[in-house]
Length: 336
Image (spheres, rainbow, N blue to C red):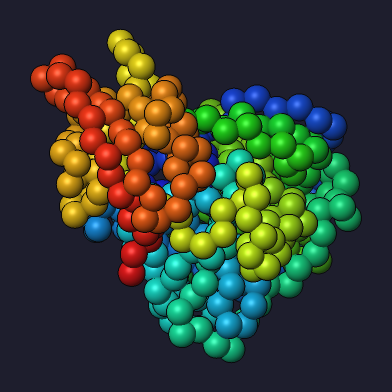
């Protein structure tokens, strides 16, 4: 894990990027002229700290309400210890907390503290799109901040399935995606995909970029993301949707380990439950709550079932090859 992590489930910049679209399926189409609008409002830069500032990351978000409810990707804020959001329209920065999230659909809902009078995004619907329609992706490309970068393109596929590979080795299968040939970059994750009339129709989530590659991006249809937001704000938790701040173990993991079961501990946050239990960088975390960990996303899925304050047993192999175990009390995610 590098000191800076730009978030746009995109790839080939190994340490800087987060994910790679591996495969897709759906209705294919051809290119057409790019979108004609030039300005979209209701966009925020999302900046997070992991391990209490030792690692940084950047992404994008979409303002839904004037008092600071924001949509972004779950992978943007995953394992964050601090979240700061800068509103592009008023150039003010806010502390943010997580209202809830859906790991499988990669959607998170944030609340900006002390926000009022924010300009909200103009919302549309992916159902209005057809293959060949003009779209533009906006975002905090490469974490540069300031005026969002705009990437024009066209819809090339609807109802696409994307197998997304993250830099930590985890994989997600995202369905019913909007595929386009917009040239998105790391940092664009969570930003709006906009139709030719300037209306948000999706959330930029994954893509492929780099020298010699054909631009390809995947976006979550807006209606799908808004369904998560509605459930979160209504307090309707489910097997897919977590309401409230998530549990916090305090490790970043990668892997899987090539020789054994388990995932490799890449970072341990100071003062975290994991540090108090004795975990250090380079250990192999084998089980959490009696569940075998094979891929990094297994840990997130296990913790999803528990809340802050829950006591869970963990087992690991230390760097000397000795088996160790402990019971930890999970903390509260994204402390401010």
